Length: 493
Ligand code: NAI
Ligand code: MG
Image (tube, rainbow, N blue to C red; front, side, top):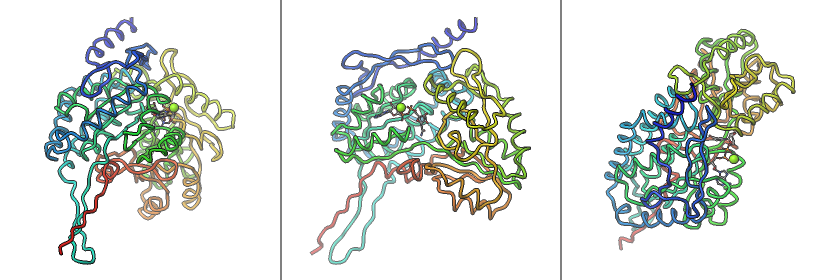
């Protein structure tokens, strides 16, 4: 019976979905007519078929984006009117918030409480934040030597190719479209093959908002062919990518011949540091949120939890209780806290890390196994007595697997926290302000949270040191990715 209910529900949610690509304002199939399927990760059922875009489709989309970029309709549109279109898009998303949240949950598996109350509000907020920037991109007058007037102005970089992952499908669209559209770029977006549905729907809402044809194009397809063609395309000026570091290496190499501008937001193995003087209840909640949010599929997951030795044993035992009490199951149940992983490949990768943790001698104190027998669910897993060189302590697992490490003092924990190729985020829990500042100062990461975790805001730049990325998204800084600087010098003689 449960399946029958789910089917009826899925069907009604899917009535709202778009399953064609958006190129030049038209809803189209792939040029060669091919499609691929997208699944409900909670049931493993196919929920829709969408066009499998290839080089030809990318070429059509890039050409449309170029025409739109050069058209007076977009180029000469008053900046404030560009902002108005973006506000309108945010309003339409807000109007459809429940339907979009349901579609996101169906395609991605994340609990409805999260898609409805976290992802969607952040999407709307991000678009409004950047809508407000559209008419505030000012230049400067520069005091150069000689009898000249010299000014600097900012111009859009051109056609932006945007390649996004599946962990926050709609939010990643907002992070990409917000600054690009505010800057006056046109875009070709390639959503992740696991989760194409909400991006397509956002495209439909953008058309309803009144964006000119070709300003926003969406080509669905895989990474190796479709994404690859976007990266290599001569008519694309810039690639913004979020995903795996290894993919970023390939993109960087493939973008070299056309010297594209690149921004990357990649993975992490973020240290979450708990001192014995911390507010333990807050730190426990922070450790849970920091790792298990979104089934652990967060680039900034606090997956290396360092706990000071005096507090270690009690902390691990209280944490295990919390992990065991976490509610897994139907992502559409409003009380569900954890849904399935996004697909079989992620499920397999995570299970193999759980095996490696066990084999390398870490102590599995919670979870460590699949949950149920249908869908890609994995029990919240905690490993204690983890050593720094174990794979579960060095590699991005991207699932609900927490490694808890023991430390003695601040010098030691700073050194170990930094002994990673990543540098996306870090957190520290302490009542000692000097310790908090030292950690914030010495840990090499793009974001540091003190006595909190996963606090995101459209106004606060986000991105990584080291292998965690290049450039920053969000905030005023995020606009730089989509702008060129022009210097104009005028002789006054
Ligand atoms: P991925 O990096 O392969 O995929 C992300 C996006 O890049 C997708 O849209 C994909 O189609 C595209 N892509 C893949 N290969 C490409 C290529 N050669 N050229 C152009 N585009 C390409 O990540 P994947 O395979 O989905 O996940 C693997 C691991 O990456 C995860 O287990 C996780 O560790 C990490 N990851 C990190 C994310 C983050 O937020 N930083 C998000 C998703 C995954
Ligand atoms: Mg991949």
